[in-house]
Structures are given as C-alpha cells and as structure tokens.
Image (cartoon, rainbow, N blue to C red; front, side, top):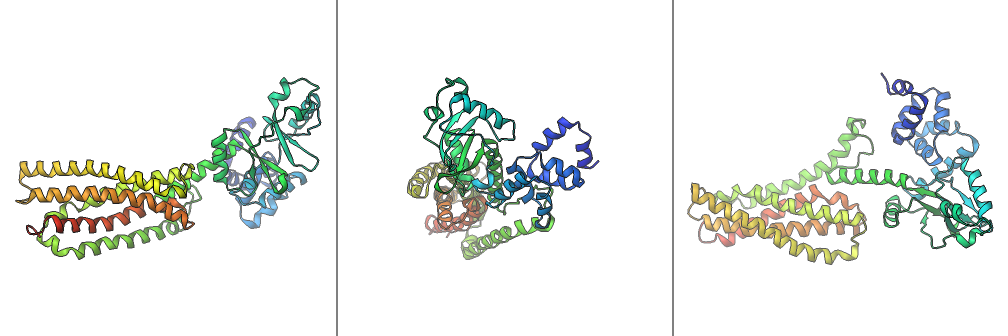
Length: 417
C-alpha cells in the first residue's frame, strides 16, 4: 500500500492531524502524489510559512503550479516569504499575527482580537501593538487584555521592552534568543522597526532539530545529507561522504610516512610498535572530546572567539590530569604484565616510562589541538563542526607518532636505541 493510500484510509480528523505534523519533505511527497484538486485542498490547510517550505521543496519548474493553487492573499504571503533565505528569520516567520492599536481600549482590543482569531493566525498568546505605519510599539498578552479594566488604553498596558529579531537574522541566532528568553513567539522586524511577522517556538524546535542533525553528520566526517538517510540517492551519498573520506585518508597516509621515518627505531625496539595503537587512539580520543565540547559551547553561545585563551588554559590543566591518569594506568599495566609474563624484555621499566610519558604529552596535545582547531575554523569562516572527530583524530595520529618516537629516543638512548 502506498503512503497516499494509507493516508486516505484514515478518517478526516486523523488525516489533518497527521498532515500538519509531517515534515515539509513528507508533505511534499504526499502532495505531489495527489490529484490536483486534492492537492489544492491540502495546500490551503497550511499556514503561509509552512506552505512556503512546501513550495520551496519541489523542483523549480513545479513551484508556479503549486502557487497557483493558493488564493490570491495566501499566494502573496507565500511569495513574500520565499523572497527570504530559507535559514533566515524572514524565511521562518508567519505574516499572520494578532495586532492592535495603542489608542484602543481593552474592550475594543478584545473584540478586535476575537475577530482576528476567527481567521487563520499563528498564535493568540500575544497581540502586537502597531502604529499606522506598521511600526512595532509594544506587545500585550491576551491574558492582560482579559484581566484589565475595559476602559483602560492598550498603550497603558503594553510592554515596550521588546525582544525582536531582524528579518535577515540566521535561524541559529534566532534559536539562541528563544533559548535565552523562553518566549512562545518573537516578532520579526525590518528596516525602521516595521513589523513583518512572528517566529513561533514550534518553528524553532524544527530548526534546532535540523541544525543538530547537520552538525552531527559533519562531526562524523561527511557533508550534511539534507535528506532522510533512506531517501538520498546512492551517488549523492557517495559525493557527500567520498570527498571528506578521501581527505582523511590522505591525512592518514602521513601516519605511514611517520612510521617509515622511525623505521630504524622500530627495528631495534620492536616492542615500541605494540603500543602505537594505544598511543594514537588516546590522543585522538582526547582531541575529539575537547573538540566536541568546544564546538557545542560555541553553538550555545557559551564560548566566543575572544575566549580562546581561557579555553586553552583549561585544556592544559585538564589534559595534564587526564594524561597523568592514562599514563599511570599504562605504566601499571606494562609493569604488571612484565612481572607476570616477562613480555617486554629486560628494559621493560624504560619501555613503561616511555609509554607513560608519551600518554601524558599526547593526551595533553590532543586536547589542545581539539580545542584550538574549532577557533581557527570559525575565524577562517568555516563551520567548526567539520573540525571535529575525524579531522582532529587524523591530525593527532600523525603528530602523536612523532612525539612518541622522539620521547622513545630520549628515554631509551643507550639501551634499546
């Protein structure tokens, strides 16, 4: 049974509830499978901002046909929203909101709000106070209107200390403002303070989900898919993953070069090669931890570019403590195995000391690299999420080998080397 057939098998109330809670991609898929007459009905159910998302989700050649299915007023609203970037406040906002004038009494404003609520408005939690030029003067909650004296003027009750966003503001910044102020809706203003619409918290929930998905995919060492995993084409998947995978592979080739450079040391002290996976994985894990924490702090606005020195200072102390923990564990493990099985030869204590010191230095180095790299990426204008796990791990793998064998030269000089 097709999705359209399953959809039609539901009763009307279930159909509407399901349709309105679908993602825009799912709505597009369902609408394009419908006959034109049904498509028209369901497209008109959507609010302008949601309808704009649907229209933008179809190929360019088919957008005009969808727009023609809307009535003139809705078509104008959707066309205006499509003029904004999809990831801007203007692209997210709804132009349908409750508005009142400052010279209205509470009784007049209440009746006016009631009349507006019979039409399709995004939310009636707030009424926005506008002058004749549509400039935003203040905001009043509907609860205030219902509890105030009927003859009181709106201008005496409205809040003028406003939280607003610019129509061109990126959706990530808008989501931070929602998080900071815990509002249900935020007005969107253009030049001169003219109100354009509102962004509601349900729109931001979708944005946060999309942005988190993109960041997680980038942290895995690929481009953001922009489509559900099972629906993206194989060649498109290949393109999005292949480029980064090749870049990381080329980076890892330097690991082989580093091993080759220390071939003589490995030939003299084969036991050193046993601990290479341990050394490079510990450094990579430390770097990935630091990178993930810093990138998330950046996304939440907890860390800014100017805070790089504070982050480095914290990572120095944290890296030393973590390195000491792993180094001590490695030291005990090598000495314990040597005592039980005589695995590492007559210079086992020096080998244990080499591994232990290497772990301290490499874990510290991994933490520093993982914390600084996101700042460098952000300063260069790139998305720090792309600097996370795979890239940091590759970098620390190569440099960690150099640190390990250089320390081995120093500690084992005159004995095994």
